[in-house]
Length: 482
Image 1 (spheres, rainbow, N blue to C red):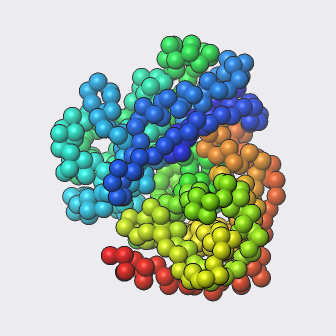
Image 2 (cartoon, rainbow, N blue to C red; image 1 turned 90 degrees about the vertical axis):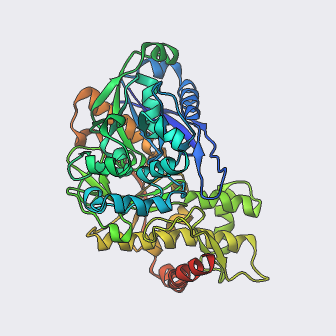
Image 3 (tube, helix red, strand yellow; image 1 turned 180 degrees about the vertical axis):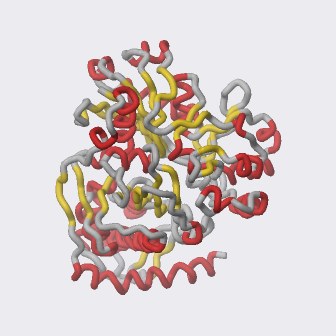
């Protein structure tokens, strides 16, 4: 059996799978996000460790005792700054933090080859600009930085004592030579850092160390190997067999992602497409990233006073698609693809006296779908040909939302058994490869198809005018928010 741990933004998920890939047990422990100032998003690194232990100890003791290896996945880009004693110097700055917009410009001036080396435009969500912000605004903290780790890799440090990372997660720092799969001295120098402050690099299928004996005893398992793992989206892709050139997925988690596996490095920074290493050797991937997806559903449920996402989906379905003129721009935390805009914020347009909670709910689901349509267009400009999308994440639970998204994107959505398990499943499979040496094609197989939602041409026609209004609205809304 193999244990996968996903250090997410809203919680830590732990899952145990069998050698055949069957999910035998899973548990989640919640996490909170602190927003002490506009654009800020932070978590205390030690909260990740507390939640990790809580999730694992919630799993069946018999299953834990049979674990042969552990894999890690996690939220990307988070800047976890450690001093000489390996303790955090400040709260971690998260992926959806937008404070370092000015430092993005500074970084590309200091590193004029940024886009060529990393394949990406400098964005506030990435790790490197966060360090420039700390250097400018918290110089006392910056002076004491001895190591910078990503969220899952801080948990690894607690588990094994090793400072290590994988290629896929590290590609999101803007310190990696993504084509060469190694740290870039030029990008580190542009951030005032050097390679001694970076973790050792591994492929996602390699073991980075062993579980500490004291931790193993507390968890009721042997001191098993811990695999490098992957960033959340790459690990999620491995979990559902998105490992070949052109394979694609749609992740509907807190954020939203369209992920396309590629056999080569194919960047498109001009449209804010992310081009990163995959968590599997010799593979890369492209992503369109939207900072708010299922987060919009949670927010709208609170706004309308309904009892959670399920009730909101029911409201939207009762209202029907394109039920009214209401239009929602889902930029609650800014946006990445294709706008690279940390400042823009969400908006409702077309509200009237007859607007009700059902039409609000419908507009929110449609707005997130429209944002993904923008992202898919940017991926196609980068050379991706997406024939279908396998769906993962919490949003995969709503077939109605799937109908909306499939119609707007014009591609079939494939729902898989266990697709909602997400990156933790992929982390467990990477652990299996690290321990057994099995071929990736034998381990990272696509789960059985539960159902497929084909694009509905009539529904697409009904939504097309709203999509056109959505695309026209962004520059206007952005202008009045300046």
